[in-house]
Every structure is written in structure tokens, then in C-alpha cells.
Amino acid sequence: MPFAPALSTPNRRSFLRMGAISAAALAAAPLRAFAQAPAADPLTSMRAPALTTPITTTRLYDNLFLLQGAGGNMATQIGPEGKLLIDASYLTAAPRILEALKALSPDPLDALINTHWHVDHADGNQPLHEAGFTIFAHSKTRERLSTPQSIKLLGISLPAYPRAAWPSITFDTALHADHNGDTLDLVHFDPAHTDTDIYIHFHKANVLHLGDIFFNGFYPFIDEGSGGNIHGMIAGAARGLALADSSTKIIPGHGPLATKADLQRYHDVLVAARDAIAPLKAKGLSEAEVVAQHPTAATDTTWGKGFINPATFNGIVYRTV
Image (tube, rainbow, N blue to C red):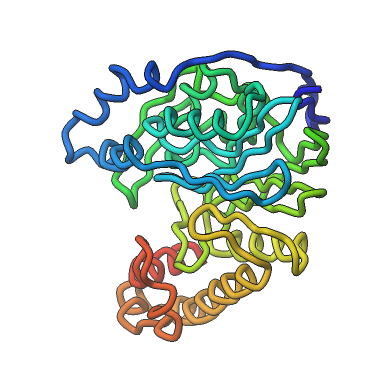
């Protein structure tokens, strides 16, 4: 049967959304318009690489694959009950995502799950929904996608997305389902990267998608404007560690496929940053004074090479500790 979850809220539906839309149609006027918009627009700049970046697929289990492109890491489960996709990347990536899914199997499109609301994970909701997916997410993801939002650190202001981009099946705490021979848990984190984060755990495949709770190998972005904070990120990483064993394949929101040992190193880096910065703030030092002391110097060389540099990361920790 199609993705028919047991919800922790009164919403309960059984459905199969079937449809087809060609990659050529998706790549038509609306997507070209984004590519031709002024380069100074941060959102346009973020979307542009997805127009041409290929989607790579890595088999994680018999019917479960990691998908990687210009946006956040995705995953797909294939099978006769329909394709399940985790995250939607940028709007401009939709044609390549659909091409990659078609190459894996002829199974119909079924369920799209958003790990959280950010544009590199949910911007492609509308074209993927119109192709045949029904969208699942935490209730706050729907709230944020259906109202104007901003990401101050990235200089992005977003109007409300069209209704076709909104999740139609939402939950508050947890959602459980059997799909294509596996049992899945979708569970909400307390505010961490944002206030909309969930993880997806495939029990039989022993695969855990942590979304942007986990940036593998570099300092994470924590969206303060969406309720994110360093304490929640640490707690989220600890929760992932409790779910994983030494054989679990862990999908981070960004970065390469990970092991439990990789997640442990990341958790320890976050703890070290909090423990270095919190006492300085408690002493009354300003954010600028704390950043000037380079409190994360011991890990900056290894972890400070992502798009969040050490000074920016230290500032986020200071403000949210």
C-alpha cells in the first residue's frame, strides 16, 4: 500500500498521489526566469547552481539511496508502494531529481518528506508535488512555508510559498509508517537547527537521516530566527547517537555519508564550543570580545572550512548559548 502513516495527531489519511511531468516541462519558463533574475538576489544565487548540478545516487540498502546535488542531502526509497523522497532541494533542481528517480525504477511517486523548512531542502516542493508527490512534514514546517520568512544571516527574505508547496500531511510529535518493506519513524526534534526539524529512521535498512541537525565535517548553520540554538543542536546530535549503532548509515543535511563515529566527533565539537563560549559570556564579555579570543581555535582548522567560518559560528553560539 502507499505511504499510510499512523499519526500522533488526529490527521490520518491513506493515499497514492500518481502523476507525471516531464523534466523538460519543469525546466521551462519559471525556472529560466529564476536563472535570469539579478545575480545580486541571494536566493537566485543559491538556486542557480541547481539548474545544472547533476544528482548523484548512492545505494545504501536494497531499495534505499542517497541523492546528492546542489542542495541538502536527499534520500529515496523505491518499491511497488511508490517512491518515497526525503527533501526537495531547490526549485531549480526538480528536473534533475525527477530524472534521477526515474532512472532508479518505474515505481510511481508517493511521499515527499521535508526534514525542515529551509530553501535548500523544501524549495522544490511545488514542482515535485505537481509531479505526483504528497508532502509530509512537521506542522511548523507548513506554518513557515505558508507565511513570509527570512534568514537574516544569509540575507534572504521569502514570501509565502504557493499552496502547492505546503505539506498537506503534518504531525506535531511523531509519525510512524510501514512502506516498501521497512518501518519508518519520523520524529520531531526540540528547536535545534530550526523549530521545524525532524529525523527519519529506516529500521530494517538501518539508515538515519538527520537533516540539518548534522553538518558532517564543518561547523553548522544554526538559524536563530527560526528558533535554532546550540543547546538543541547538541541534544539533537545526542539523540542521533542514541538511535545509531556502529553499522548505521547516517545521512547529514550537508556533507558526506557518515557513521556513528563521525556523528560523535561532530557532537563533541559542538559541546566543546558551547563549553568554551558559555563561561566567557557569563563573565560579561561582549560577543566581539569572545570572538576575538578565538575560543574554538582547537577545532577551527579542521571544522572551520565550510560556509560558516569560525567567527560566524562563535557568534551564533554566543547568541544562543
